[in-house]
Image (cartoon, rainbow, N blue to C red; front, side, top):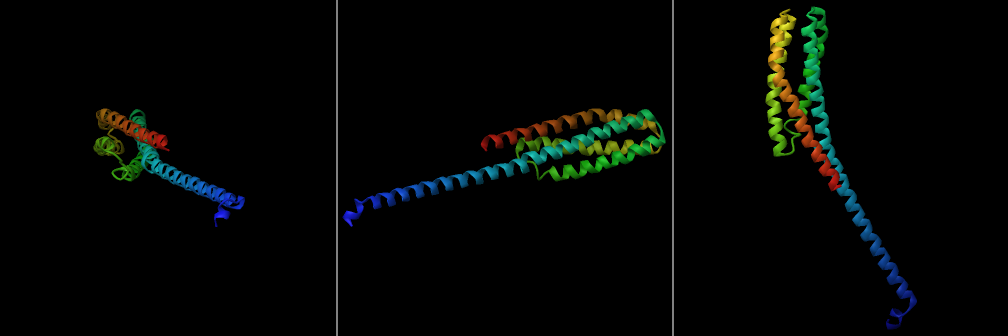
Amino acid sequence: MNKFVHTIRFKIIVSLGACVAVNIAVGLSGANGLARLNSNMSDTFSTAVLPIAQLSDVRAAELDIRAKLRRMQVARSPENVAKNATSVEADLAIIDKQWSSYYPAGVSGDKERAVADQIASGLKDLQAQTNEALSDFKAGNFDAAGDVINRSADAADAVAGLLRDDSQINVEEAKQYSDDG
């Protein structure tokens, strides 16, 4: 046995064994890194990118509602009301769907939750005011609808700003996941 230890065959076997061990270590390290990267990418999508998309849909629908209500206010015609009311109702449905998908399950931190709670409250008020304005428009009461729209402008601006802030929080989370990756 002592003679075998000093042979070239033994040295080749030991070297080959060391190479195999190093390759296994590199492979396991790579597999661990890929698993971590995959987890970060999944977390980035589910906790940052998807909420950004949902918040963007809510924000776009909210802005579209405001524009359509103003068009109805300016046009003052039943045809225009009928045309735009359907679109406003569809936008309200988008807000309901996207917001309920995002809130509260999609909120990932205390700072985000504080902003999202304010948005939830603001959206309820905004939806009630939108429904009130729509009812007035459908009844042909354009002046009352205009008053509701004017009263809701500050609330709508506040909700839009909060949606922007919430999206920014999610962008920062996505950047953090990217940096970790």
